[in-house]
Image (cartoon, rainbow, N blue to C red; front, side, top):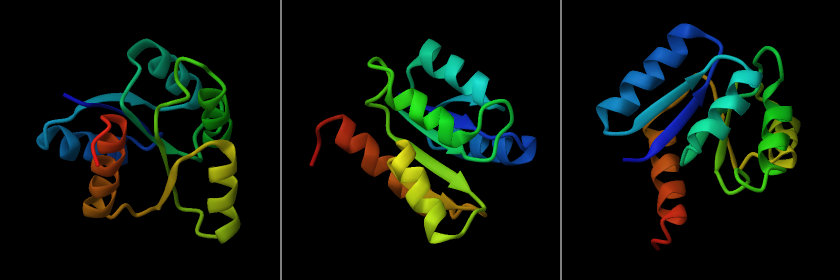
Length: 126
């Protein structure tokens, strides 16, 4: 079973994403701020990370940078989640180490497709 770390500071958004992913057979790990995200990623080494960029403690951009600088965690795909809709926000997220970018409100079918694609890549499938 693939593990997905959901980093989201809004409880309703976090719980909704958790329920929808678990319903599809994914194991979920939750974090509500940047410090907890780094801790949970190191502890559980998830297969993919859904990372809200506007989170307390340590913002998502810095979390992404730290994860990508960690030899044990840098291979984990990170999908940035944000309400910031400017093109420069996408570029900033990618520069920080995010592998993809998804605007809020989340289109669940689209993000589910991205998750599946990243997991196939990680598993070495075409």
